[in-house]
Each structure stands twice: as C-alpha cells, then as structure tokens.
Amino acid sequence: MKLLITGGAGFIGSAVVRLAVARGHEVVNLDALTYAACLENVAAAAESPLYAFEQADIRDRAALDRIFAAHRPDAVMHLAAESHVDRSIDGPGDFIETNITGTYNMLEAARAYWVAEGKPEAFRFHHISTDEVFGSLPADPSVQFTEETPYDPRSPYSASKASSDHLVRAWHETYGLPVVLTNCSNNYGPYHFPEKLIPVVILNALAGKPLPIYGTGENIRDWLYVEDHADALLLVVEKGALGRSYNIGGENERTNLELVKTLCSILDAKRPKESGSYADQITFVTDRPGHDARYAIDPSRIRDELGWRPSVTVEEGLEKTVQWYLDNEAWWRPLQDRKGVGQRLGTGGAA
Ligand SMILES: NC(=O)c1ccc[n+]([C@@H]2O[C@H](COP(=O)([O-])OP(=O)(O)OC[C@H]3O[C@@H](n4cnc5c(N)ncnc54)[C@H](O)[C@@H]3O)[C@@H](O)[C@H]2O)c1
Image 1 (cartoon, rainbow, N blue to C red):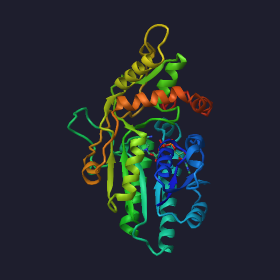
Image 2 (cartoon, rainbow, N blue to C red):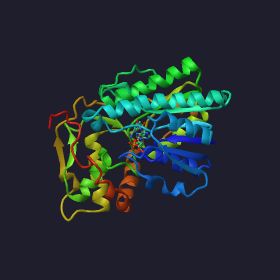
Image 3 (cartoon, protein in one colour):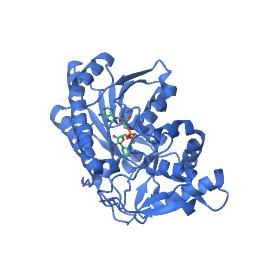
Image 4 (tube, rainbow, N blue to C red):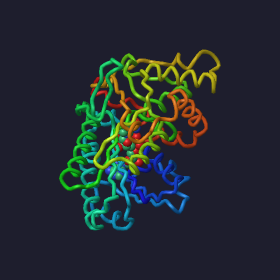
C-alpha cells in the first residue's frame, strides 16, 4: 500500500512512518517541518527505497495537488497539526489555520485526486484526531468516551481538531470521499517532543529542576504508548469500515500525580540520585485555564470489530520511554533550544 502520511516528522506521525516502512508499505512523508518536527525521528526509515519526503505546508493547496499527482497514494493518513494545548492558549491562530484550513485543503486535494483517478473504492482518507474533542469527564470510572459521545471541545486546540473532524465527516456525506477517523487518548513514548508532560518530567528530573504539576495533579489521562497507537492506525487504514470512527485508548487511566511519581521511581532505580528521590523535585504550579478533569476511552469498538488491544501497560511503556531518553540525549538536547521549550506557556496571563 502506498501511504501519504502528513506530519510524519512529528511524534506520532514518525512512529507511523517507521512502522509502515518496516511492514513494507511505501510511504510519502509530507511535513512542513515546524518547530515540532524532527527528521531524525525517521532517519532509519529514510534509508529505505520505500520512503520519500516532501517538505510542504498543508495550507498550500497547489503544493498538495502536485504531491498527490506525483505520488498517486492508495491512502492518506492525516496527522499534520499544531498539537500543543498550551501553545493554542497563547496563539490560537496557527491552530485555526493548520488544523482547520489545512485539513480543508487536504480534503479538497484528496477529493480532486480521487475523482481524477475514477473514484477508486479502496481509497481511504484517514483523519487522526484526539479524544479532547469530547470535552471533560467526571471522576466516575463507569463513564468513558465512546464514538457516540457528543462533541464538547474546550480549548482552542480541541476546538480546532473538532472542526476538522466535522469537515472530514461532511466530505464523506456530501462528496462520498472514503474516510475513516480515529480519536485517541494521550500518547507517550520515544521521540516525544520535550515540551509535553512526560519528557519534561524526565528531562527536568535529570537536570535537577522542579517537576511542574498543573493544579493539584488530580487530572486523569488514559495513556497510550505511541508504538501501540501507530499499530492501531495502520490497522484502521487497512481494515476500518468506511465512514466509521474508532476511539483508541491505552486502557491505562492515571492521575498526573500518579504518572509523575511512577516516572520518578523508574528514574530512582535506573539513575539513582546521590540522596533522596526524584519525587522530592515535584512542584505544584498554577493550573492550565480550562484544564479538562478526566479523559478516558471506551475502546470496545476497535477491540470488538478490529481485534486491537494495547500491548503494554503504562508502567511497561514508561519504563521503555525513560530508558529511551537516557540513551538518546543527542536527540533531545538540541530540541531544548527551540522557541518556547522549557518555558511555562498557556497560562492565559494567570502566571
Ligand atoms: N500527542 C498526542 O497525545 C495526541 C493525542 C491525540 C491526537 N493527536 C493528534 O495526532 C496528530 C499528531 O500529533 P503529534 O503529537 O505527533 O504532533 P507533533 O506536534 O509532534 O507533530 C506534528 C507534525 O505536523 C507538522 N505540521 C504542523 N503544521 C503543519 C502544516 N501546516 N503543514 C504540514 N505539516 C505541518 C509538524 O512539522 C510536525 O512534524 C495530530 O493531528 C494530533 O492532533 C495527538
């Protein structure tokens, strides 16, 4: 299968690129190379004859038309997006342009290509989205996000992703474009950009800096190992039912405080401090405005219809992740100099 993967130099996109090439798929990686991108993430895949790279911006429709015509993909996996909630609070404009207008451009370029090819039935436009479109859940563990949960986005990021999901469904209903959608929970793992919670905690711990926890640390997330997510995405693009959406979760709900304490105990075992525990560095900071209390995925559709389940628990995945950061300082060290990394963003003027 020839896959056009957008955002393939980012965190999740690069995991999809690596796995797709390893499984023998041809891959065209389309990425604008924003501050969040890193081509080292796909260095191994890039040596394969199955791999091609196109530096292009999804806001540039002419570039997209050229890339579709040049590569003639069997399917699109659309991951390119502005992805950091805190940055969306400080500057929502880029999120509107890339996540909404960019997705509109991708849909129109894909539709024009699909029509020009004679509307092949097997073509797929796979839109990758987030569980944040569903809003915030109460603590009650019996309540989870299903594919029928009404949309209730609450940050500029999640509102932009919700808008893009609606566009994708509309292009299916109105123009018959063959689409599939996925909404997943919080990812973590190797190559996670060092502005997100888990790499920030690991790298601040090693640097002897405070480990910032927003509010009281009681917010709950359902943690999904990025390589499990990539596996689920390839399954959905190949086997997902037309027009259907699938929620993808890690079956691993943890509070942020539990998560950070687990990271500290893994680090205590792997790289012990001279005295005390890394948990001594935990510091509670002003909460994010509009911070959603709980996200949790009901994964029964993807499990029952496609037979997919995550392969690791969060403790196993965190152990692999910590080891990866310990072994890959040459990857993360230069990224810490990129704009905004290491700074408190998205306080809405509150801190
Ligand atoms: N990280 C998560 O936990 C998570 C959870 C659910 C859903 N998602 C979704 O998965 C997708 C990938 O997320 P990620 O964490 O890998 O993001 P990321 O920020 O690590 O990577 C995004 C990539 O998109 C590229 N990009 C951004 N704007 C672009 C543009 N205008 N044109 C072309 N390329 C552009 C960037 O250069 C980067 O390589 C996003 O759509 C995101 O909404 C992420």
